Figure 1: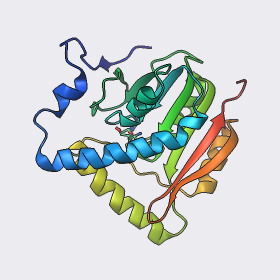
Figure 2: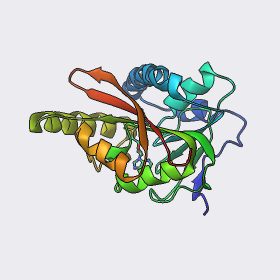
Figure 3: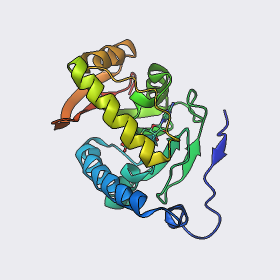
Figure 4: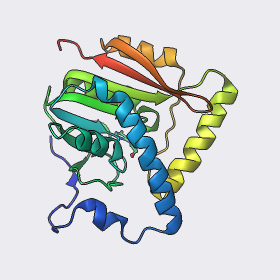
Length: 215
Ligand SMILES: C[S@@+](CC[C@H](N)C(=O)[O-])C[C@H]1O[C@@H](n2cnc3c(N)ncnc32)[C@H](O)[C@@H]1O
């Protein structure tokens, strides 16, 4: 298996500096608020990360991974995505959205944060996360309870992530209720060791801490 592209890190400056140049005033404001939110989310899942090798799947700007790496210099965090939105200084691998270009058990912890609902095939991505994770998979998802909640999520997510990525981010938007994800974890023999709400207001955001089979 091969990575189809890697972020060019050879120009001497970290990718974050290079990529931030030329962003509009509006994008910079949005970046700042998304970065703050990523820091909060990273700190919420940090107690469940077992290291040192961490893969952040659907990393977007890479801020969750960057916050984890900045808070714990012992962690080696790699980013994986289908589009290059990386503004962090961490290495990004791009792939085809189906098969992770890594061997079995390559990472101690695999993060899949706010990403499954964007994937064309969320179950395949979850199975791949489980395959490459030796000890832990951490999934966070936006979930709904009612059809109005689903509509709200769809509207907020489509608008925000479209603006955030210059409409590059794939928007399959397979939102689901908590029970749906619990069924998928059971299908893949992923044991749920903790479920924690990260927010329960307009945006219902839940974290699932999972152990892959044979971990
Ligand atoms: C809403 S962003 C989440 C960013 C970050 N994880 C966070 O918590 O802020 C969703 C990300 O999933 C990525 N994505 C979409 N399909 C994917 C796939 N099949 N595999 C991995 N990432 C994918 C998108 O490109 C995007 O960067």
